[in-house]
Length: 378
Image (cartoon, rainbow, N blue to C red; front, top):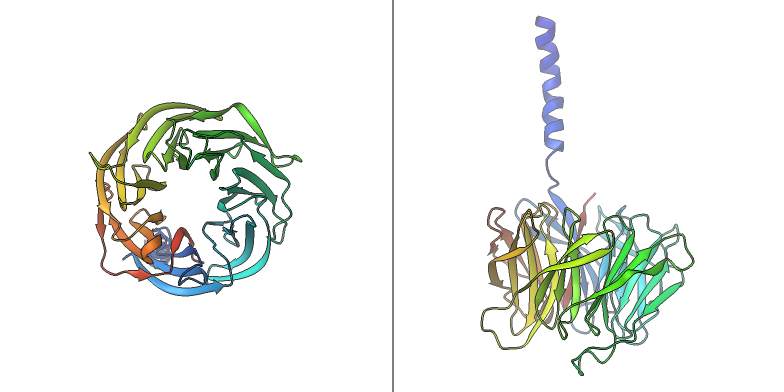
């Protein structure tokens, strides 16, 4: 009996340590992409302390022109940024030291289009996918083993247009999102009111081919912009920029079936609006959408666990102008909003039971922040 008690005493510190290690991470890196036309110099990295929602400056890299959208590789070693510079669009690759929050430039390549505004990378880090807004193209750039980008190998384009002659005179691709199993790539086209679906085969000379059917259409003039898959992989939530709606689709093996459309405008609102970003909490209970121009809000929706349909639970000011992007911390406790045209970032506490947001005190001043990405701090 005595030997057993001694053994328990020796094991207790180990068990306590193991229990502590199993808790959620307490620190993350927050990467901030910007437009460099004003006060910003490039990409900024802040340490995010997840217990209190506090941000602390770590590092920055300048000389990066208009890195308006970023993505981080699955192994957390590389970061890729679009360079949204008109007709001469490019994409830049960086090594990333997560412990120091340090970025080191590797190389850049043509985005095969004008005004690249979105980039994603597959989990195996074989290819990067770029949405070129002004030229209306989706492009594929291979990734080398050292993280550098190779010349683009494929570009796809839709010759269509929409009913709004000012905004939809031609195709305008806005996102490029892989399905959870990475067998399909979905991309939005604001100019043609389509959500395209392509089959992805990474080893092929042309990795993307049209699925069957190759797209679904939304309400004319709605302007598809961003999308997110549900945590259970059964639904796609599509945000539209011009209509400020969320379209809910059932998803199964590259096939989409619309089941709900819900607005995130205030009742009776008649002013200028521009939906921006959409994200879901890690627990899958709530969806948030940002809106710009004369709205400047974040709207919260509860997600029905059985049907996936949405019901609004909250709408709150972003206390700034044009919240182009926001991010939810990986623990699901905080939401961080970037106000592009007021050079400000704010942090909100998420009520995990209701989905409602409470603004924390303090403002982070960053020139033209337009993209926020959380990643583990090693």
